[in-house]
Image (cartoon, rainbow, N blue to C red; front, side, top):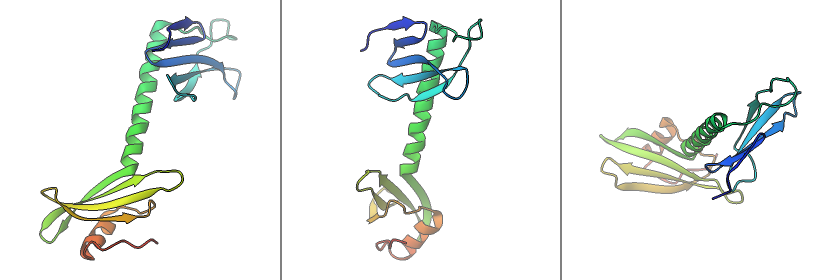
Amino acid sequence: MTERITEPRLWQDNGWTARVIKNEDDDGWAVAMTPDGQAEPALVGPWTMGRDKKNPKPLDTAAFNTLVKTAHEFVRRHEQQLHAALHQQIEIAHQGGRVTVSLDIEPDEENPSAMLRATDAAGDLLAEVRVPPSFKLTRASASAWAAGGFTPVRSR
């Protein structure tokens, strides 16, 4: 755990660091929220000017707690969106039953891959094939794969 810091432009507590910085785009100020252990901020947003309209308003407990909550929610939403993009699934009707077709993408920088799977209503694996990570899982592509006997999918 990191040391607690409570300075007017730098707060560190609860796994986060808030740093008030000069806004590069205008004459105002911004606050960068960085999770402990990370080099880059997870969120940068505008910060309030102080009463002199020149310097930033100092950080305080209420502001810091609000910033931590906002940054945490931002990171959580980003993780949920990433998960949804990398792990998709669709249910289709096939031979009088329901089949779940899922696409799991492994976003490796050097060798990304993806796996297409079909499972029956009981959760038993019907088929599994490697596909390009660019494969688009739609109801039409899942139905076509099932209608073709779950044979390997060709790259387009």
